[in-house]
Image 1 (tube, rainbow, N blue to C red):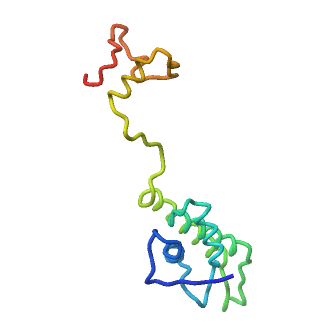
Image 2: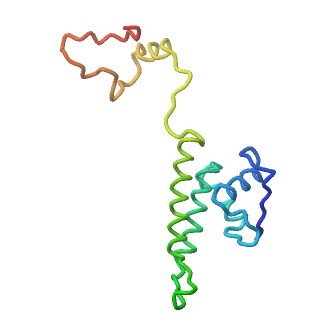
Image 3: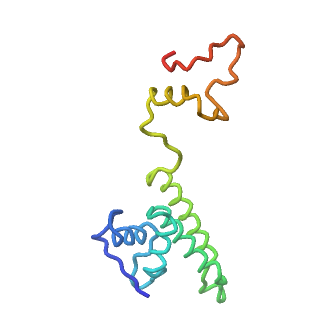
Amino acid sequence: MAWTYDPTTLGTAEADERLNSVRLLSGDTDITDQQLQDEEIEFSLTQTGNNVYYSAAWSARAISSKYARLVDTDVNGILGSKYSTLAKQYMTLADTLEYQGKTSGAVIGIRAGGISVTSVKAVRQNTDRIDPSFRRDRFKNPESYNHSDDYTS
């Protein structure tokens, strides 16, 4: 098991850059207070498709679960540890990082690129093609509506 962090090597292109970026985002940069091993962060990167924001959120949740196991202590009101507060703070950080992953990281969703109007018309004119289960303006009113395949109108 190893723990490394190099603040001069941050990014998303190389594996070591992603690891350092996840450490930075999740706050695990203090060599005297190591939270996750390199192998654990590498696993989180694998689980999240190398998205550093989602991996940092995953890591923050893992750190939160470590603190959630510990009990809050109080010694005569003088000295105490509130691990439940720390666990909640890491969960809040995880939610924030996940949001950043949705807004700043890789785009997730459905995309259709490289489709031309000519291609769509050619596919629709193919008589051997199975009819689609839905279509644009299929149920548009009134009944006199012209259901042409003309995309310019």
